[in-house]
Length: 271
Length: 117
Length: 158
Ligand code: SF4
Ligand code: FES
Image (spheres, helix red, strand yellow):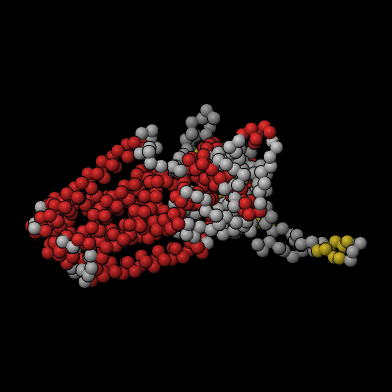
């Protein structure tokens, strides 16, 4: 982005070697006032969703999450949202920002380019309060695909602990892409089929089913394929790919789901 | 249809889809060159006595019914979540499918036999 | 959480589906056209069976039944029924061409399904947008357009 501004470049000189290391210019931050339009919901208040607007000044380095935290400190302590790491790794802060599911801690109002920033709870999830949504269905579906290492010999896996399960670089690449998932639920929130079919396992769970089944150390593919081979499993997917378009970690769940379908139809994993 | 796994059903669905592209293509090609003329009685009699075409029509009838009803079943089960939804949908669709297939077969076969004499 | 929920989950924003390709619309289109086509198929079979006198065809029954379903003349040689048939045929072509054929090719034969790879994070290209699938969509569009032209000639011109 064009967030590099002019400013005094800090110059550090390492005394021992005659090399000048130039730090990137930080520049003076660009301040702007934004209007945060938040879709709120309070079960104790009654009456469904309602909208609130907050005026807030943010720099080009600050994120939507920073803005929400500022609002909570200085303007409205009742505003609820979920966050933890503030650096795009815990997957707690998913919300619909300007109509698209995004991580609040990875989205800067400056980059969005709009003065009014609309913030809504994730679609396809039941709201708890304001922007915080209920993930229990989502995690129940995730659990149902057995997203862990399954070995036929459990004593060897859990008790004797004598064996290593080696893996080559190529074998790692078979599933690494899907292992980046942070369970943020953005894909689940964007999927049109999850809305249509509320029992659909969803892109996240199915991508994890593939991630573990494609792992060369794993021997539980048969079990997982049985779970996903149903109307509510992979066959609800029509490859619209919305999940892959919104995923903040570029997991491409749509690819994983369609590799699973191919696996089920042809009887072997596509390599 | 608890016996048939979803992927088996889907494999049939796809194979039937490919078959349909061919036979539906034939069916539509016989509207050539003019739709209005192609459905006048003398032309229809000619078509019915054309055994290649009529074979395509038989295949089309069964393939389209199966493909359509499997798809319709998927659609209904996606929208309808009830304990007995699956069995209800299966039974109703199978009855409809068999009924339509039987009626179509009787009409088509009867027409061929009558016109061939 | 003893509170009764007063709100339901909301659907994803429709505007989301205008971004980056029309794949979401293909999905919706496939569902809707499929439902219409299966109902048409049943009706069509029953009508033609009746027109064939359920196995005892005669020119009189055929002309009565077909004349009835075709309805009055509109615009040149075309009837109301012609237009309906025309639209149905078009729907069938797009139903198969738009998403059906793509799904069969990608899922069964793995056409356009890339291998999982180490991607350059951030902003890798999702598989739906890779060129392997883009050409499938272009082919589908071209086939549908050719079909459209032929069907229009058959139904309204000749
Ligand atoms: S696949 Fe991507 S969008 Fe979906 S939960 Fe994982 S990280 Fe989030
Ligand atoms: S707060 Fe952890 S991902 Fe945003």
